[in-house]
Image 1 (tube, one colour):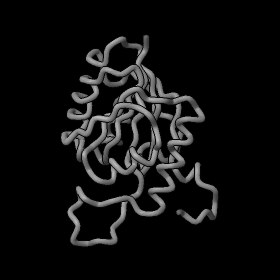
Image 2 (tube, rainbow, N blue to C red):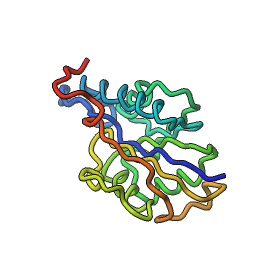
Image 3 (cartoon, rainbow, N blue to C red):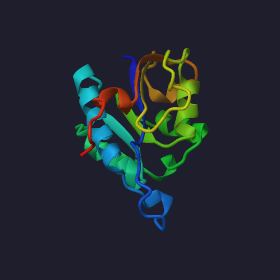
Image 4 (cartoon, rainbow, N blue to C red):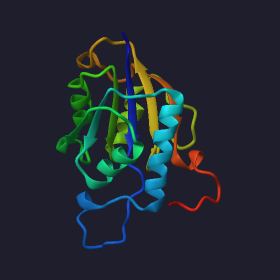
Length: 170
């Protein structure tokens, strides 16, 4: 059975508290709306993870909570500002058939570029903005067998595409 990855960058975070450590920054109002919209998009398309690997930063945890998905979630300290090698190692430890990995740039965007055989035809894929979400399938039966460049990109979305123009974030 093939494996599916949902690779997501956290939603937009708040910079209201300048003394707050980066790790402790929460989402801002647009980020909260975006995370909820992304959760709806995943449910509508049937992209339902059975495992989630989430950076232990506040903004990634809040993004996960606002997605409203029902899957076991593992907080991972190693995913906080992880590079591509660390992300690959973490994913190779996954056990789910459909894994959601939630983290940070620049590592996450680089990882997305390295995972697929062909990048999605989307103008924002390479910069992987906040909330960017890639869905890719891999013809492997175990994540331990994952090799870069072998994923087939199925879908890619950014929150701006899901939120109606002019919407006032909650």
